[in-house]
Length: 282
Ligand SMILES: [Zn+2]
Ligand SMILES: [Zn+2]
Image 1 (cartoon, rainbow, N blue to C red):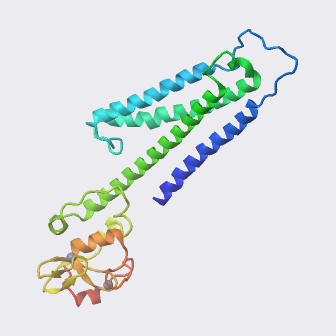
Image 2: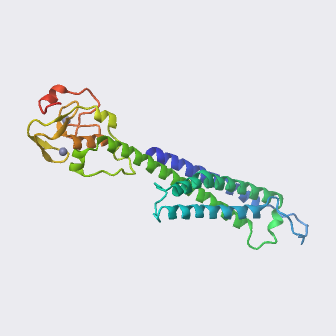
Image 3: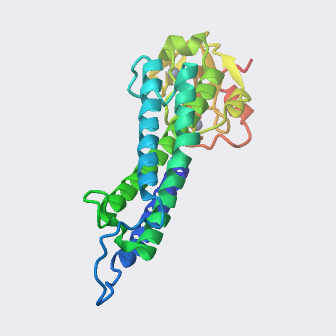
């Protein structure tokens, strides 16, 4: 999550800095001094850049965003968070089109609009005189809203990618350790959209650890607080040799790298001698 938040903050900061920078430039352009002694002409003046075109296409892009969201949600049976993990092909295409096509388009169009407005205020500041609603303030407000929308949606897309990355990592981790014994003890596990199961050993490292069948009854497994009975699937912790149910210690080791009892690090040489005094290694 730390990496993702860093990236999210970077995107947000960059877009906001760009918006602020553009507003500062526009602010200077808005204060264009009037030319003394020159009478106001009644002849309509064409704007230096086609701002009405910018306004119209911006509206079309916003409508396209809304349409993509509506189509995706309908294809995913109205699921509120459909874009996190779309199942249908239409849903996947709808979400992909929003971040791969519409988002860059709107970002680029917003930047172009800032440039056009700045140039128009500099070159033909009187071209707004005949309009009562398409004023520089209206354009600036629209540009700011577009910039904020781009930043907010980019943040959502990054969060969705991170959630999907976590879910896949969790799914792989769960698949690697889940068997009938684990399901019997803990029930079926569902992949989560957090890195909860990815802070310890890798599935390969866990599978490489020795496992055995208990040859006698033993003390409690401190993970599940149940007795270790003869015939239970067990695993001895590398380093110290403490014994736990295999299902319990595997789930623990996906999160942590230390023994739950003595805090010995798992990433060290396996102590076969200590393990032999506590269980039978198969
Ligand atoms: Zn246990
Ligand atoms: Zn230990």
